[in-house]
Image 1 (cartoon, one colour):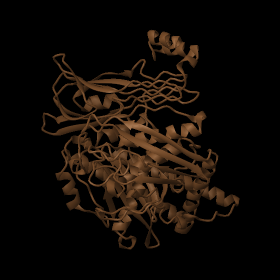
Image 2 (cartoon, rainbow, N blue to C red):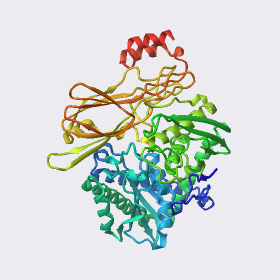
Image 3 (cartoon, rainbow, N blue to C red):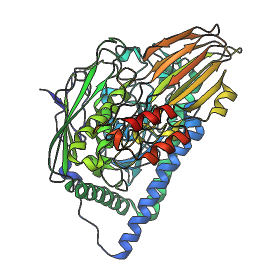
Image 4 (cartoon, rainbow, N blue to C red):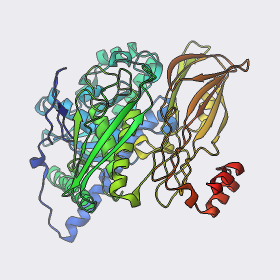
Length: 590
């Protein structure tokens, strides 16, 4: 069985390359603790908080400067600081795990393509290749080297989903893509700026291949603005503390996170546990399902997740590149430990993966990867299912998945408009608590990344007729699954629609005797009253003025036997409209 490496990999260039399965330079990453005197502790805390503010400011700059609606209104942007060895030092609070994993994996590829000694102050690099650490074509990583003492010591990184990079469907939502060639322009390691001067040739190529050239260039410039601010703030810290002192405290911060995670993992029961999760389809072969299988081994304060047995890669777009699979693994493990453990390289050091080559979680080029969230979410569910056996007191049922869509059209002025939208389902119940309604797991950004309705209606040709919870959509159980959402958009001008979702055929299952949530759906009610049900993955559907597009997201699974639910909780559900009275009565009869 061929494998790709775990979290510390450093992929090498070349289409046929397969990096070895190992942590890169782990022996170089360990550092001795600093002196345990009070002044050192205070300085360490000041520096750590300064780094947190620095990366947060970078992400805010990206949001404020971006041209895409989903960035402006959803604030879905990443800011991160990494060191010259490719280690993640700090990330913005709103950064999802999939973004931080991609920035660190992508930086390793950039450093291999451009040796540190060849970089110059003012250089800014970009890439979006999922086979070199990226996510998919529309998620562009921008990294700027930060110099101290005449050499590269750190990198500022930003990442967002830019407006449009071409491909068969607008906004990077190639729901039926069969290769990366269908998903938009892929950038190898390129210099966006050379010693502070924009590389106009690269920007011109990107603009020429985009349906919305002004927006995509605006988004890229926002990314560059973010890393420039980040670099300036780090340079200020160097001026205050000196590069060596600053670097020492950064190294100690990583070691601190590693120690805390190791201690937390050591508290989990040692052993090997197995879980799996089923993906509905890839849209290309609708009758085919895909199984993600995770064998989790805990012991000695570390964890290994082996995906042997996972389905071969898909002919559609639901494949997850190695950085994205890693993000799902890391997120799932962090769900079981103290959330206050810092999210930096120290966490990556203790997590090992076995990723079978040519599988859904580690595909061969040029397999399409734009729909990777379907598989990354399945990775999380499979690991949580496995560890529910190890930790039944922390068991959690499966959750609804983000339901994504793009709408695009042409304004009367001739300018093209587009929006990437999404809505979340319910989270699965956990022991002792019902699942949250209408939200998403943190690695998807949570509900805070969903744009508000009013700014969208003010700028785009549709009206939101309804957005509310779906009664009875949460899975039954001693603890109920979170509710899904119904949202309906009425078009006030013609548009083209693309949708991509999952858990619409196989709904999120319950656990420990709990019932499944309801499945999601997409539909269009035409202006003449005709109702059309859409597939879970369908692209370039024409909409006319007056047509209503409706999303119904899936509910979370329930946990525990429904008969054991507290009658007072059932009564409260009925009062608040989360379940209908008939459903509540049925629950009491179970």
